[in-house]
Amino acid sequence: MKMSKRLKKLKQVLRRKRQGKARMPRFVRPESWRYKRLDTGWRRARGIDSKIRRKHKGFPVMPSIGYRSPSKLRNLHPSGLEEVLVYNVHQLEGLHPKFKAVRIARRVGDRKRLDILDRADELGLHVLNPRMKTRVIEDILTKSGEEL
Image (cartoon, rainbow, N blue to C red; front, side):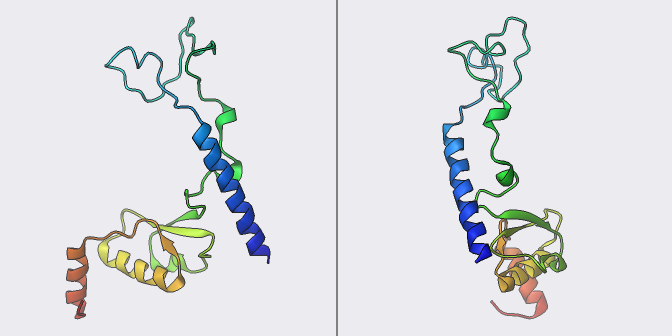
C-alpha cells in the first residue's frame, strides 16, 4: 500500500517536471546568433550594458533559480528511477527494482559486466547501459565452454 502511494506521487511529480521542461526556454549565449565563431552554449552575460543581464524585454532570458526542477527529481533518471553506479555483482544486492536502476561503471570489464547483467536480470533490475559487443560475448561463452 505504502509503495503504491509513493509510486503515484513519483509519477505525478515526474509529469510536472516534464511539463516544466517543455515550457523552459532555450538558454543561448549572448551574441551567439550574431557571430559564427561563438558557440550557442550558455555563458553568463557580464557586460555593463548587456540587455540580457539587465533582463530587458524582448531579449533572451538568463537561467535563474526559478527554472530549477523539483528537489525530489533532481538526480533521477528520466524514467523516474534512481541511478545506482555498480562496479561488481555484490552491489546489486538489496536494490529495489521499482525505485532503483543500475548503471554499470565504465571501467568494468566485459566478463564482470556479463555477470552483473545476469544477476540484475535475476533480481529484476533495469540496467541503463546493458550494451556489449556480441563478439566479446561469444568469446566469453566459448572460453567458458558454453554454446550460444
